[in-house]
Image (cartoon, rainbow, N blue to C red; front, side):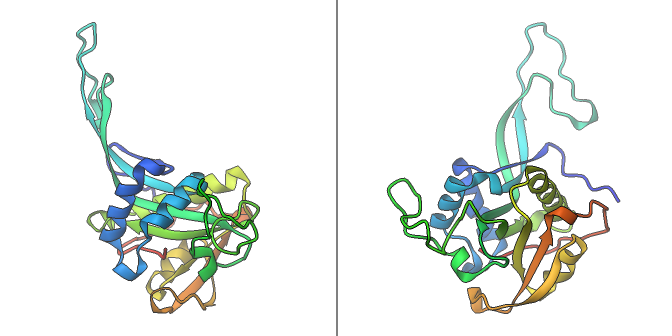
Length: 230
């Protein structure tokens, strides 16, 4: 089955300019105890923005061309002389690199930071570690008004493919609630074991996908209620 994003939707990494949109989507998709804080969001987007990804729906405003030619609006494409006037974030992934195989409580915490937003102690087990070969996903969420449209499937498949081609890690790991385990399994993730992570009272499962053995076959997947930890 082929999946399509909504009209005028794009996938791109997040940046610090997207913090407010990110936090708004976290509020829409997570209970308070599972939301990523502004401090964590800013740290991760400052230190490793390339490990983030977001689905944005763009709106355009049109400008008449100098020749007076009519805008090309065929096939639902924006006018050829248009420019982006706004973007709405409808799904996102946020991650860091870890030296462990699984997501841990320490990996989800903030290290002590210097004035430049970097870890004071490079040996601190908390936060992002560039030398790590595991990418730990801390947040996956689809706006509730766009759930059930396979947007989560598209975003995660795109993310796995992009990270695979960059050759910057050996695996992607996350923790998931039981209800989302089948969804991630259909995307190629291994349901490894119960996780000792204490976030939001615990009860998580360790899941991971090996980047060297990514399966690109498309399955009939749904992403209703898709969300993940911080």
